[in-house]
Length: 509
Image 1: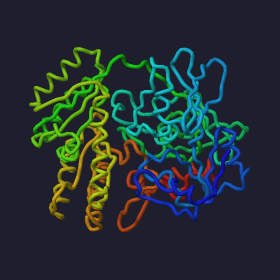
Image 2: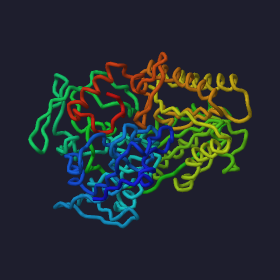
Image 3: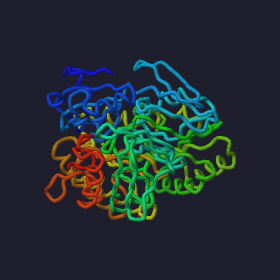
Image 4: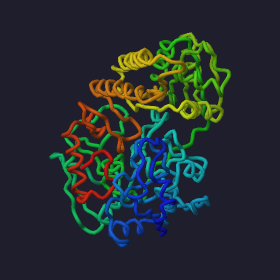
């Protein structure tokens, strides 16, 4: 196992994709590069001289500061955890990558795979047999699969296939003391008293009281999972590395669709676009996989790269569907006409990959050119409150533009319309604008919570914070309150009593 202490080599691990938080290289002592489960247990048992403050690092694609080592200590990079341990009854599939040799195992009936945490979603897609695939489809395909499990990541296709949680069959996890838990879905469940009890490889037993809060009934990636009778495995999925380190994952696979079709429909009003999306949602069981939304400001950004986007287009909806469902395809186009579509483009998903990704790229380019900053939401609300949320977004946009009149857009609104999960991005040109945007952001977040929604539908909360009544508090407190954070801390203190793992994620103490 490689260990580095050179400060210049540590530098790339001190921030994530958001660049919102950055740690000092002086407070990080070293980076570990474990290659297997045994390496991980050795690190956490102290075989390399102590384990104070270990922050796990994936590919750096996160936007919540989860991998940023603000409390110093050591970094554990998972990028060389690329090979699953061979076992009888599973087919081995190997491949070579710049990071090293990778190996996954696939069941002989092609229904499951065993994968190491360090391989990326792109690598997994390339290595799997062509007749099957792993349905979770987070937007950033260069993310490591272990990180997507740790955040219960999701994306556009969650509308049809569900989030990462729904596709995890088993996990191997290393605890803060170097002990291990191998858990399989359906084997250990919480008891009626709200506790979940289990044993580790060494024979130690744990009795964990589950958080007392109620989780929102929407797409959600905020906080530890808590539900009556829940499965042990769900406590660790989405736990953002605060309870243990995932060293092996068994995933479910699905037959690969024979054909997919993508259609982007453009409308002269947002109302027409939203009405069209309502029609699409009821076709989910008939093969609608994803429904994505782009508002007028989003289209304005994308027009630089895609000149076919006209100024008369005030909103767009991109739908992905199973291409062999002719009746569903007919209904899509019938609904387009019913909602006064101006134009639409159809083709295989590969034709539209750049269309979807051009928006964040264009926004980031604008930010660099104008020395501006972005403040982005990750909210999802119940269907009944979505119209009110759309009004709130528009009011926030108008208030921001009225307070700071200037050329250029002030916000963009886009995302996973199928799940009522849109990203509302404030584009702030300077410090005063950002301060005002944060006030609007807080108001929107409070509405989301009041509506029974979530402040983080797919990204997790990491080390994000928010100012409430003049105090800077963990972001998650807005949703679950101080009692909820205390419940999460109580779980962590049982499994990680010295607060070693990913300190600062979700809770501070």
